[in-house]
Image (cartoon, rainbow, N blue to C red; front, side, top):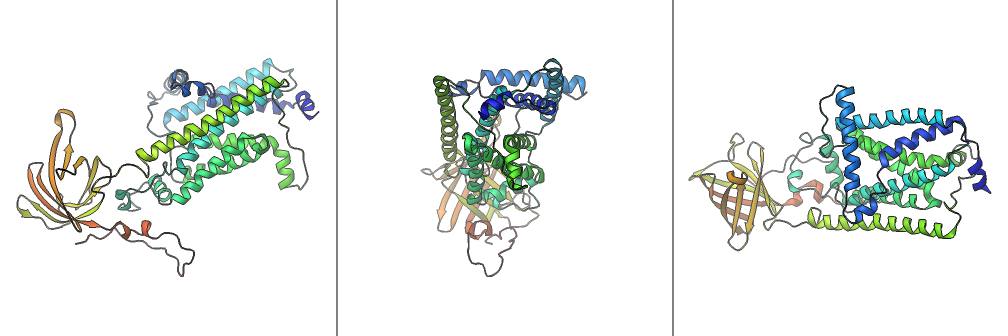
Length: 440
């Protein structure tokens, strides 16, 4: 009975105009999802590419011809707040306004949009589910803000960008990263079921509002997209706004919006249910399997260097001359870091940092440093010898004969990694240790 009444209810002009605008705007953001999902299963991306190429062309046309901007780059950089993105969001909003005006003029007599609204809500919900699971699981598996690398432990707050500081404090705690990720996963999971969909919208809004504020406060260039997901979550929650406000503000019970089956015939219900189950299974399976692989590629289970550690350069002999550890020396190494199997990091006395491609041969006992690429590439193999408390390195490096004695620096000296969790604290442990002092 409630379904029949809702299907024949007379919508107010404002409600109809609001639906038209939200419908056009959200679908401009959402499409071609979910039609790309079956293609993605088979690693096909042509539909995504067609949509992306079309909107890139239109956005560049608007930006250059109407706004007088230079050609806008859409090349992925990791930023979602490029000039291109701002122009595209402005374009979509303008198209939604124009589309709403035209739609309102040619469709004045319609009583409501109940049926298309229900399909629209369903598509929006699954779009949110997809992205909440995507961003949630990469935090759960400690991948988005990963375990702190050794070189990051040596950086000062002042040298870090606001975004770098955010990544550092999130990466410093696996517990908090998992909590933040599970909040997003739970929000996405609640959206799946009709009985918990309103709660899922509220949780999605709350979680994404926090993400949005972090992006604003720490200048993370995903402000537009986080705001988009936040408002989509709010829209889903506000479908039951009367019941929410009645309970929380007015202490007056209100009926919630019914979510009856989309079809009356049983076979259509079964087909839609099967599609939804397959979608949810694909969302969970694809994200979890991808992130499990990523943990072994660049996460906490990634391969480590055979000489893993931070080393202080105690003695540095160049062409027979011993160079003392003077902060004014621009050639002497102060520290050497081995963490990734194919990379090493040298920190000079003046705190300059240089990254080298390097390979370690544990049989020949050599570390080969590579400088340059292609025809300009040069390799410098240095012999190493393990000591009880470090290493020795010797050989020819960039035409200089070097001999170095390195002493292992105990990584547990860093407050950020050695403090751990404590139920009992007699005094607040609010400490800062300057750059770890070298062993010498």
